[in-house]
Image 1 (spheres, rainbow, N blue to C red):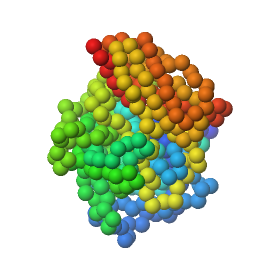
Image 2 (tube, rainbow, N blue to C red; image 1 turned 60 degrees about the vertical axis):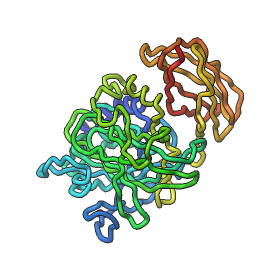
Image 3 (cartoon, rainbow, N blue to C red; image 1 turned 90 degrees about the vertical axis):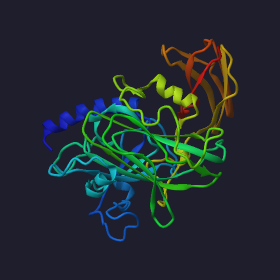
Image 4 (cartoon, rainbow, N blue to C red; image 1 turned 180 degrees about the horizontal axis):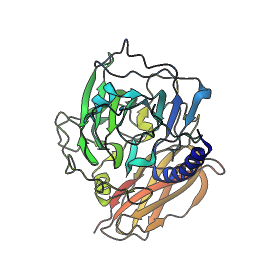
Length: 394
């Protein structure tokens, strides 16, 4: 690489690191591959791309798509593939996976939460390397991802039926994987389209400690946006678990409908927060249990984790909230007015505890708010819960 190109890359990287660190809640890792992908003895559909061999730890680097911390047994693992210039511009995730050229790397993600964003930030590793195809071109568009993990309940989530959905731009297909490797599609949100909510064909049942293996196939076709958010909610009362998921947003699309990508970081819209009010939530890192690898090399041994994050009750002017952490840590909660963006925080409690309670006052009646809790181990880790949304009474 020439000195001029290194300087350009360094400038772009500095900008991208700042942008991505603010914009994403996704942990990734690129492991340099060795040899070629072997398509022999693959269980599953013909042409399915198998997992590449895991490489030595010294050849593993984690990229800056990171705003959180993952445990070593949590997350997703998979392949990145791209189309050659001469190939058709396919409109299905499976065609990308079957016909794409694999990048000799293994990808690790802590969860699938990529709000709608500009397509052209690319894949940067932590050491400053921009991931390129064999023609020395950045992978901005016409690439596919095949990711594997296992669904599981997080602490505090009740056993039962769960509806699932995916917000994606472009196509995504989530399939459950049987013990003999057969894939059964559950969410079909395939095709070239703006950010669209694809809803599951039926609900899934989970018991505490149970894990459901799955494969997510995704592709990014032509520019200008990219997104991937996997959500679920408990089956609403009276709904048929064997029927297709019914929600007012199922099948709707728009690159500004769920997230505003014109700001950095991309901001959820009122439509997205209303989905949270209806019970939807993006799956957290604790919902993804690693497949048959020993550990996630991008994770750490004992991350600070928030679980059981929930609202006790809501009045016109206040909201008390509780959560649990796996290590003694501090307590503070905050709400954001979804319309005005105004933020109100609870008093900071420096007491180190694993059972947290905070109350936020000064709210307005009949207002949509987004709520988070933050805990910190002094001088060490800090972690913030996933957002939940609520509307104060009239």
